[in-house]
Image (cartoon, rainbow, N blue to C red; front, top):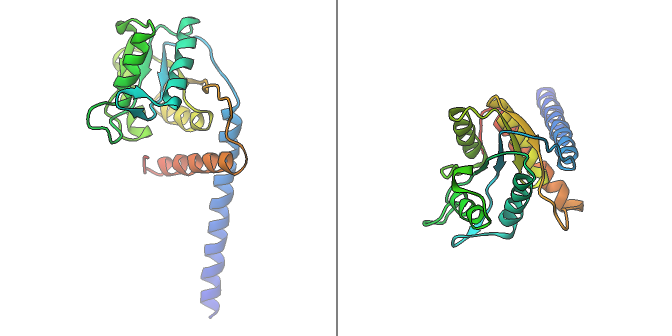
Length: 198
């Protein structure tokens, strides 16, 4: 009986430690989500989001519009779009993003595409490889605010200099929804740190 209590106590302490760690990372994620670090860089990396039969979803379109704004302001000479098929047998997020940027005046030679990644980590690893091949050492990352912290950490782990620039949101998630998004990203970040990429 004493041993069972001891095991339960150790297990409870471990669970509490994990919960505190996740909560701490979630706070860092929230803080990062409210900071725009935009400055000149070699490339703007746009994280993929859903597309609907070749058209960007509202979230992807908002990310692309923000990347367009930064590109037109001259912060970087190139835009790198990311994202694989995500369940669509015909289109990839990266290719849909490329088409959207082309339609809005970005020359094809200024757009790089990563279209194989099925997860954030896979897309970022492939994006980092493209950057290395082209000798691009710094990037502005465009995504939703709650996503920036993890994306920055993964790309920094690939040796890149990374600046976060969250897309403007008319109604940023608040309350339980905002908290859950931060906790979910904290869990994904912690899993990546122990070698489970999602």
